[in-house]
Image 1 (cartoon, one colour):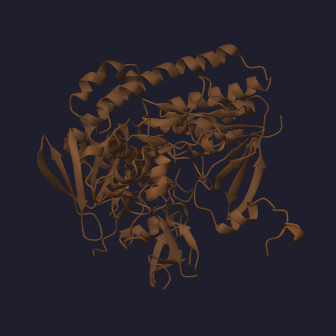
Image 2: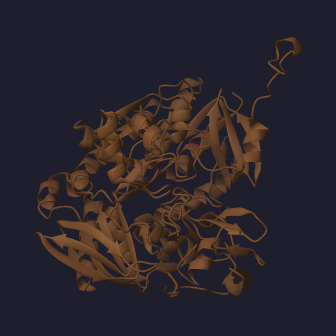
Image 3: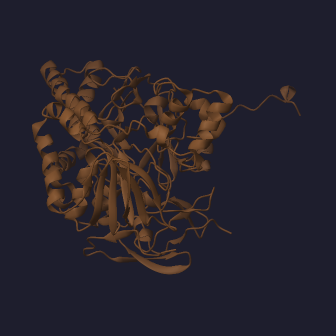
Length: 466
Length: 97
């Protein structure tokens, strides 16, 4: 076997690398970040020395263990930090690093591309000071900074409470935690949450600490709008139909996570609609094999299951790769990893019960809501397009309105836009489909695109038009 | 418009300060800062929307939303959340005139 590549150096990618190195391979590990860890165990620049306990809290032990294992692996790895994979075609990766483009042909590929916040926006979300929950956490973990000083955390999902507590601990002024999940969700979710009692206990501990710290926590909230001159100064919201508002200098919000699937799409993987993530995800078997031979999927980039599951899935996908290449793999090890993933999935199902997305978000979104922050396409424009053209499909909506065509390539707007389309067209979220991924998956200099374009043979003189 | 910073530092440590220029004004950040951190520790804007001219200050901080691309005085563009601050950078929240 010649070239085995892992994309993503978070928990899934690192565990995959470990299995491959143990089998005697020397994988290439490509990551956009300068240091390993992914988003969950993101490390600050080396000059900014901070204690793991300050950065990762409960998970400091896991983070430290991963970093130590990686340090031991490093001599047997080709680690390429600060490197973006912006295209995959003909089993070749197109890379951008230090402003220079390069290609890398692969024989086998593990995609561990992770996730970003899933956001369902509210009016005013483009104001300076409104960030994702993940951004609020990155500011703290990677840059020892807090958004604020007075901050409101809003939306839903486990990150909501974790980030709020991390801010309280770091000295932040948390004005309120506004959970859009209904209060009764907790009772319904409880039995399933006990699939991972230790994690459930951490959640309860977080809630208790926030209460002790005097942080107001509200449930069943509807986020109405953020306002401010040049930056956010107030968030308007509703609870039990009663309008309320909170003064603030910053807002961190999000509604769970969204898988980064662009590279799987460019690699040619088949996708299915996943009712749990309410998103189109690359198809994979229990071991992480995609529909494309030699391409494997692991971690939150394949389906949202969290960091612990990502470690298991990363290791399992690497074993599948080894099995498929004829390396001896202990069957019991592979099976144990798959079995360990079962309660992780059950727990995730309960988390979805605990933190459901606001069901009436699309119906409530005002026409003036900016859905696409890149090109400022509004909900009203999307609805008008559906009314005028009768479109029921995301790529047609994109062609008509430019939604998803801006620099972020739909990462921030697709969850909102697809729900607005489904609601306006009177069909299901699955039926509106998904935005097809386009290279480059992130902006790259035009000179890089030009340099990587295939050489076009000159047209013979007698066949020219001119 | 308020110029109160959007980011507050909780730890500086033994880091060197790094001088840079923001819209022609001399500023300083710290070694290990991203451009986004250095700029938002001074104020509340990174760029202005090409569509509405409204101020923007980034959103995801992890290289996904692409809402923190800044211009430099020498005509380069950089993504503020994933570019480390370097001494002497001349950053602009506006498009070149």
